[in-house]
Length: 430
Image (cartoon, rainbow, N blue to C red; front, top):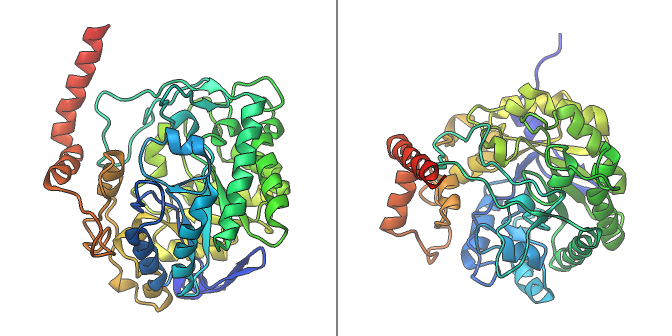
């Protein structure tokens, strides 16, 4: 009879990505909670946020809330973002990596090419994606305590030309060069949710008939080519990952096996790990679930493991239950657990798990006030952790009006009334 391995034993064990050793299997996932400067540089709060998570014992930090191209900076639905799109930002990014490295913690950059179907057209510029298909936000359900009164359908993007696809690829390669120069230990390319590269990967959003549409191999082409070009730039030993959706949870979309088939065509470009992201903006409830382990219940990591083999590291998401994550890793379904909201609520979660002090963990309650703050472009705090967002004592704080707006945006009665009013106004316009 086999004895189940403890969370402390499994999550506290070392593993490697490419040739880079990672001291434990708890990864801080990328989040847009960093509050950089208005021109896109890491602020004192940005650096203090990451230093606090490194001090809390996390094995790897992935820096998100960032853009790899000027296009992404211009079309972002929230601002500001960290910038990897110009050489002038390298020195400031180096301050961030140096600060994290004081804790012997590796830090990766998320290279974010374009917001695609979720982009905001500004200053006469179009947004583009694989096909001119808008996003019906949350049509398959929103996370708990998140509301969009009246619903929202994004502006339709135009179909990206081959020249645009190759232009974005070149910009991502340049951003990879800057990330390496800034001292990042690895990088990942964002290809999840409803963003640019993700729009190519599923028939839900890709209706093309050229070499970038149709078969799984063709739908993988844009991202695979970008990975291969980045690999040629950074060399064979620099870790490269991709963040991919694993299940559309939508009619006309792909399930885990379809997404895993696409992944198998991308990996040969030079992928060392895949960060698994469930759902998209149209099925946002699946991306920000309340129960731990939905991804495992859906069979998504299992499908990816079968498709890409043991040589590619897989990161679970939305599995804060340490024993649940450890059991999945011990079974070979994944190699690490990647957490976001839980590490806002308790930055010491990794140390507590590794030291067997799980009873002391401050648990995220999935009330999603952080998500509402992000949607309202309000400084992000966590009501379970008063320190979060204030790691630097001089960081700008939300004012009373902003805090009231966040509360109102999570109130089901008020949002129910707002939804009825919005839908009535839309009906009258027709």
